[in-house]
Image 1 (cartoon, helix red, strand yellow):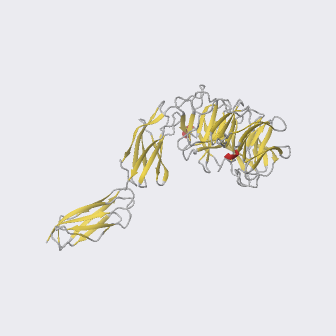
Image 2: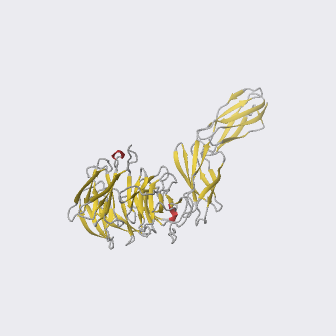
Image 3: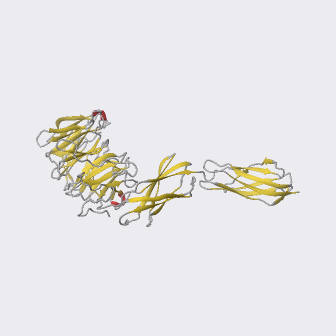
Length: 565
């Protein structure tokens, strides 16, 4: 079971905290191939999700409860995209290609529909502000919705037909509104090229027409620092606006003039791109989603006030059962801050819903000592063990933790089976390298519900050819007339030896004269037989050798036979 926030609130000790998603939260595999939008309905404890795929024909809104279980769906005539709750939470507005549908959140039934222009490809952003429903419209004449030259307009749902506002932008348009500031509509330009210096602005939506407030562009005089907008969130008190900016990280702004807030959030890890941001309804926390490399955090939770010294909690999603990143706009809180809903993906068509109950405290972990390998010199096709030790502070984990590993060689990066960590912290990662040359193993502990991830450790090994050996059985004496018969066996480690092997055979007589005999053919079981009629008496040495192959080293053996008359 996940740990629920206690009365002490969010507490972390020491360095930033993190843990791997499973098993410390509830995870549901979503029946969607892409992601459109998510809405959290506290009054009825429902989470609504839409698929971002733009296809013709009937679709549906997926409905989940707060435990991550699917409890139903809301049918739509065409692909659903954006969603927004009414101010009183009684109505869910859902946009599809030609209409804005409304659903009663208490009965989960459709309550109405308002026509819009036909937009089959790009979907819509939708927001409720000033008691009115606003939506974006991108021309359906192009199938490439994120083209920077597209013109997106902002419209209002009317009694019969949509009402144009006169506001538009090139590229895409992101909208945000909510109970934090019920009359404020936030609009940002997305999908534009950096040299367009995308903008952010707010509107007063209390009247019949929108009145624009402050606006801001973010590039400096040299054109650097332009906004790459992925998500917008407003703080619970309405005084701050946070942006998930893939080019910068998480920007925190003063809502009154869009200037930078006095204190900023900590930078994301190197190589990490912000993808989502959300404030908890109780005003205590902010969640920041990202696309992060390796074991770097894909999700961070911390006090909403960046001046608060409490360390952030970090969550790493890595694996086939969790996804590997937080999708754009894929975060949503319950009002009391006890649950965070996060949608992750594997970067492709697989998506998951995580129901996260942030832990009250987490502790450090670290790899200690040096890594050792058995055998010390690994060979291709043979089992390899990498031994190490993981040290965990704080209480012992409720369940055995695992160390994950990846192998990088000339063929690319491959996942290696995880290894359980014993009570004393020891573990052994097992692998069978299948390529010669340099292989670098990276070991990771992504953490658990009470422990932060450890800093990755690596070991680089030179994988050699597998060894072979030749075993000979020969008589001590033989006659020239009767001849010599020698049997043997060729054995190899690692991968199976290739078929059709012919061994080189030489004979050296007592005078030192060496001659090559007919090669010996190796049978499927590795055995072979050599027959010879020597011409000279005395000590005779028979040498048998195998030159090796792509994955096996060579080997040789000798047998000495006394030849009599």
